[in-house]
Image (cartoon, rainbow, N blue to C red; front, top):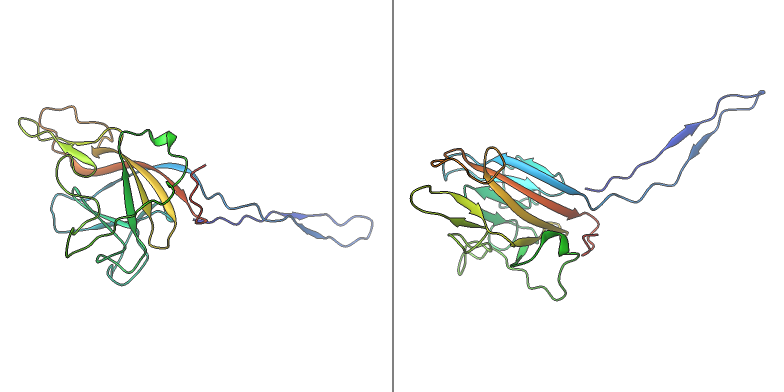
Length: 202
């Protein structure tokens, strides 16, 4: 989200001179910022929760198939993008494996972004254990655990970029610890969003 900041300095009236307003040039927008977000998707597979990188938060969307007000949406462990067959935006994603979040300084050159495609692969981020962003541990704990070393670069609905690493799927924002941890459906991830359309994350 672009932030254009202006500072106004009012000079006091001195010796009969009129007060003047000095306007400093606007500072460049703070496009890149590391942030963490956590929100709940719910306990059923019936509702999507929509997220905007520009807002840095979840957003309410009435007509997701026809607006660009959202970038990614979450329904339990499933993720869809505002692009392809899921929305009118430019949304896409590339999935990087065996990397460190901090080492990804920019969008890789000639990156091939995948989009949702209802005829071939409904979601660009595959569903299922080990396929997309998580592993499912199965018996006896049934935990959902983000895959280590996996970083996602999203192209947003407006054609900007964000890099994301998923951290947790539970309400405390930490890896599961209880034998039967049931408070699932709470996404926590960190991200850097580049608001000005640059491919750099520095």
